[in-house]
Image (cartoon, rainbow, N blue to C red; front, side, top):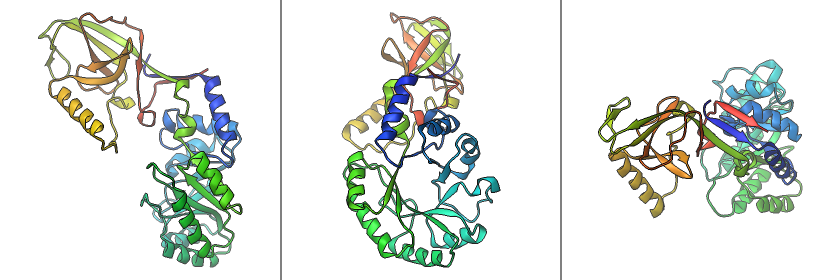
Length: 350
């Protein structure tokens, strides 16, 4: 009873295997909520895939995956001097991301044999070295012979269009900086064709694609999410209900279903779509909210139903108008979720 993710195991595993086989050097990303599956489960699945490295988002995520995966652990958030020392048992397995000149010395002073990748400042402009900083970092690394440079890291935007021109510029800058032992590039958000072209153009480099969404959620048909109907109440127009004493706009039924804000239901991340259609949708949602009608992610008989009021912490109230089929208590209804922002009560993999 609750919000449930059901996975068609054979279909999902076939997708994972096919993706890994087509992506040499794959580095699965298991950060955050583990794309809805939990990081621990994805760490075990990465072990099954046979990869030698996985990526986490932060240092705080390391303990959950380290006991479930035996290989190297790449931390995507750049290392900073204010971070606590690593557990000595993990130190040799962790690959740090470094994006500032000062942090190269600081990390290697604290951990002389640290493994690291140098992140370059891409058009994302989030973290990383500009070309001049990369030259300085190369000089600092030469003063620390015990350092283990594992390569360069490029976190590219999701915008449409080829990223190959930008990648080439960064690689040329890196070669010119004279980084000793540089032979690996860790990249994200390149298409399969772009990766093939890059490997052909830079045959001396090992290209390591980091993948999260496309790997774990690439076959949405293998995944389904359902909520349990917890209660059903027949209501007439004008009846009051809920935390805020709202009134029912017309006769029908109130459904109480599992899934609320604690699960991520009703919480939206800002979207980057600025098209006319997207703006119109936003205006429409705002107009519905003003009169108490907000479309929910819960569907009954293929139709999205309305929230009767904002979701509660662990349950939601839906309004079902008269004439619609009313599910029974205990029935399962479909839910459309954003997997990276959802926590499930139960995950079932066949």
